Amino acid sequence: MKLDPRSNKDFLAGLIFLLIGAAAMLVARGYPLGSAMRMGPGYFPTVLGGILCLFGLYVMQRGLRSGTPIKGEWGWRPLALVTLSMVLFGFVITRAGLVPALIAMFFAAALAGREFRFREVLSLSLLMSAFAVAVFVYGLKLPLRLLGGW
Image (cartoon, rainbow, N blue to C red; front, side, top):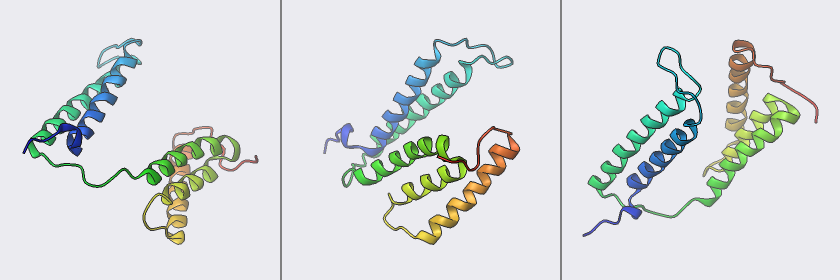
């Protein structure tokens, strides 16, 4: 049995890692690299992109060795809802603040799953909002509005 790499899930995942890593390294070419002691703005994306490329090559060769085919179809609904949740976060944070943006993002992303439990999503979104406020607003002192009017 001959395996087609286009139907191998590990090969395709590795290819995605490789492409994202190469894109990061390509974008970082326009910035000064610096050194490990004095990192320039292009250092981190170049190193991270290189690591991602190496990881992608490893996953691709593991997929070719295992030969596991893709089972099932694309989940278009989860893909759309998770993407929508990120767009919704970016839209709401500038208008209503950090906490409403996080709550909206968690609810939109939770709708992508097979099971939706309102209480679990609400408690998770409140807990993660409190954590984000503690880390980003109080810990890192980022100038984010917690609650704001439209």
